[in-house]
Image 1 (spheres, helix red, strand yellow):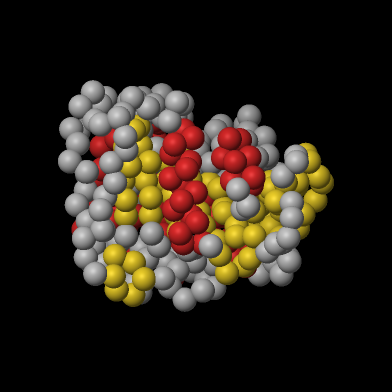
Image 2: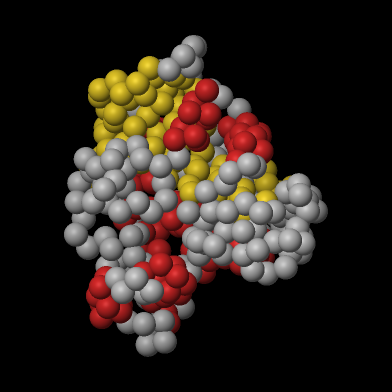
Length: 341
């Protein structure tokens, strides 16, 4: 792993935008958070919980010695002019996790990106599903792209407690992916240059990973991420659908009113001061799935904690991005190029 890069001690002034999901007042071009402070070398910072953290918490994940190994390339799924797509598996904290990996043609080693997909019902999910545009473009741009099939998805091992435990296992799977890449010894992978990209629910996995394992990745990007406060995600997505898992979660862990400390300890925003990687967040003003206010709150929390964070907003773009997707990806590749090449 390379030494930590220098990063802004304070990322600058956050965007002053009208709160909400619609954005008639936003400029056509994305706004950038300017750097405003001298650069200093970032080191992981500690945020001890005021009371002992339980086994289902981000502090518990911080204390765990995470493992990732045994990256195996299997069947060739597709051959494009610029890359080959493989089925892969690796080990993460004792579970076998499946996925797909795009390997660019040409002389490596190439920097690698781990992709954390958004929510897709595990009962219908197929390996590598989600973010096909990103898979293709990033591989054509010279990145090895490893898309993670989280536990309980595709050919990955099962974890029956994952949903009740607020899907924190997905964070372990992503950490394991980076460690498997770093220990793979494969000549096409530059094991010292690894980035992380997550969309929607995967954006929440990005936040968790940055605070649980600071220094593991070299840069991160979150697209239209969920809230950094899990109770808001439950209220937005699960409770209105009458998801029976909600009752099980609250029976096991309590409600935010009954057990606020538990909910504080499963929010990455509580531990934002641990993040050391430069983080770029993209969000459309017309996103009615994940409200823009969630990304504003996350960016504010990371900035206040001294992290290097930048929030880009896109007037009129919804959750999945349409006309301005390519523009957002150019900024994404610029971000990764600056920190991984």
